[in-house]
Length: 501
Ligand SMILES: Nc1ncnc2c1ncn2[C@@H]1O[C@H](COP(=O)(O)OP(=O)(O)OP(=O)(O)O)[C@@H](O)[C@H]1O
Ligand SMILES: [Mg+2]
Image (cartoon, rainbow, N blue to C red; front, side, top):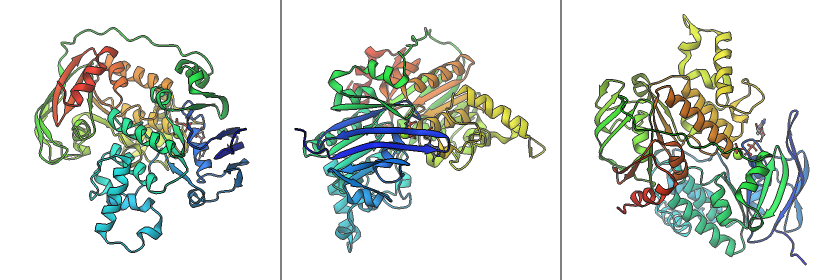
């Protein structure tokens, strides 16, 4: 007979207005089981995770931990019952240091009266358990999105939960950090912790999880052992039909004029940039791939105007500068920058989709300082269709959208600019397989129209699928340049990124 499951979800239903977001979800989880929750953007994964973690309440149905029914009213109740949750949109205190944020997760009794050095020691212990090397005394505001994600994981470790839920923890992690995370999850599950992983990266799901649950439009359409399922069956379950695979476009070397040219770019503060040269031509999509701290992120952020201390020669569509002082200057120079962290840099969550689409460039929809409502709606509606956001209408609040649909709004709002150069930082972070292809199609279309694109991604598969050329960054330098990458080049790219030539 089966032992009592550590978690049972019984008929959980959730509605937002007319919208049935979860429809009678029932499944259970054994101690030490690693399960994946799969589904398209908006399928209801995060909502289900939030209900299990006590931050959202179901309209119907219930949860039992160790066979006992529980009714969480606040996340603290769930924590007390042994449920720890790392949400998709990270919650942290930007002004506090990494160590302080990690300690926030720990039981207060232990950190009741400690000195800053004791706190750093404790935080280091948890970071070590997690296997991460983190800049403990740096404020959260100053570290990368990937590092923030690792901090959240370390924070979850401090809570010593018995059920750990991770909502897309690897969406912005490069392969080495993902591998470390999965090692950690392996150790935790061996010690009896049940893990629920939400991920769009099917490869990692199939490599690490025991079971999968697939949600489609709020219904649970498949519960299966991973061993009894193939990734393409899982995709078919997610979509409700077979995936139409889009063949890779034919590409030929470009002799088009450069649109973005960077020469001798240097930054002495870590992560450093060491004499970076790169060119992106009209109509070209160039990928930038590097491990955490390699400088790939820094390079993208520099082009977005976020690192005025990086100095060199930056030419955009003919105009030359020796640095970009702020995001405004970068925008004016003709660079549309899509940041990695949509929450802190990219979107106004309390505003509508329409506003988020038109805010970056209000001049387009206004005359003499007045916003032309009809023009605004038309422009927004057009973008909404182009990036295929799934929402009730352009008037829905962005904060109510699923993570992947927020990402589409973020990409869309930069498309409006029709800038000659597009710098995209993790453009498909957290979007599902289908939507990723949609975003890639859009970027391809823009490239065909002449836009030069630099795409920084931690997803090597994306880099290979999308880019005409792939640059590998290691220790602030570009160490490899792969033209027309294919899957066969993945190993070469990973080695170069790891400093192996
Ligand atoms: N606060 C809210 N108000 C209204 N609707 C909401 C709210 N939160 C979520 N929804 C809706 O619930 C549905 C499911 O969203 P959810 O975030 O659970 O999707 P998801 O499966 O996590 O998708 P993703 O892969 O994009 O993160 C979406 O249609 C979303 O718009
Ligand atoms: Mg989600």
